[in-house]
Length: 556
Image 1 (cartoon, rainbow, N blue to C red):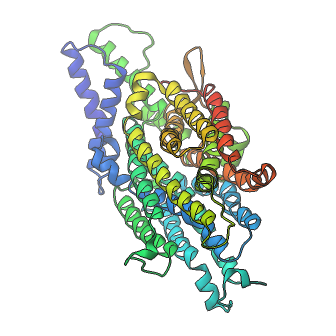
Image 2: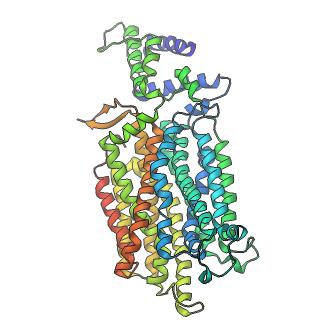
Image 3: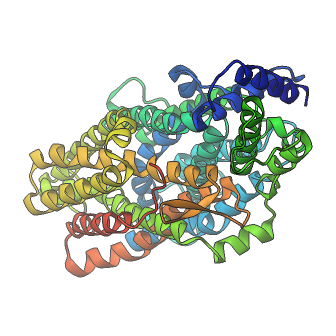
């Protein structure tokens, strides 16, 4: 309150000296400065919430993404061999991939909505992120050791072709996979909500692209680890390629999670409710300050400027403490899913089709390279030339996915500049169309050189998919608007939780994974060729690009 009074006195003196009415950006900068100084004087320093951060600080904030992308790479390379190695058929193995998407689609947004309302002293996002991270680490420890744990509980230690009846290794491995996959993707959404909570509006695009850049590096390292035959090295620590790689992943995830959780302190929800100057600047708070500045200017110049709506401190505080600042209850969250704004529905649909295209490529790419590009056969007898060709193709495919991860990291470093120069619409649609063309050409030609031509387009699409949609959700919430009429933002009258809307974006992956897991295997069997996954990736991405043309981009 004292800071606000001092600011008012200073502004009157400035205007009395002949300064002109400040611009919107100057008003916003002034409000941020007042909040920065106020937060710095608290018992716990929260000033980091109201200042720009260096690139290194953004890296530290988003380090958990390195571990998550590292884990995704290990899952892509090794989960299928692990499931087949405990005696599952291809049909049942494909169905198991649908378990975590079903759970994620229904529960991930509820967990994120819960994170909007947590009243702990440690904050809202970090407690949830810690619990998810620990569960994810438990899952990735169980996953490669399911067979060993099954033997401990009484399973016979016999080759796969001699396994029959109930086996403990199957439910244990499924639990490990569900814990790993569900918690990884749910953490992805919660982590992004935490990143953007900790950043000013100007830094939100930077932190998303930074997360994509270092995540791309983590994914690259993960795919390279998958391309190495660890059984031929002295680093085969736990007896198998899968166990060794997941040990490295366990360590990387643990370090990344620790660095992120200790990066910046969250402002507890009860503290934000008591002190308006510790809340993010809402649209109504900005408009109230703008009206007050206009009143100060008119008084200093002894002129009448319409409209003049001088606000005392209490009125300004009340406007700053509008309904948008109140916690979102579960019933509000469920109602908001049913009454979703059209702009969000279009954005989620775009993300859904994008994820369908990406998963068609991601889950079956190495199998496509081994069977279609190298001409191998996964069902060929051990030691046969056909099986050797298939295994060579799988390793070659891992190198191709490493190229995709490198390109994703590289493109994420420039996507912010591209958006500023060309606008979000052409960048969003262009990334999706490039991926569609890359998959189309790879499916037609099926040559080794096409792998390294098409995989960079995957990196461009991936960086686009995990930055622009989340930035748009942040833009909607910062402007408290989900609709534009006659070039102006229409104020939103319904409370929506930021964390819940971000998590709903992540849930599009669960929905897409569920459909791909249940449908794509039957399609492959019907056409007797897995080249269909590459063409389906191209088609889905083309549909996503068309849907992206209808997205509401606000000022981006």
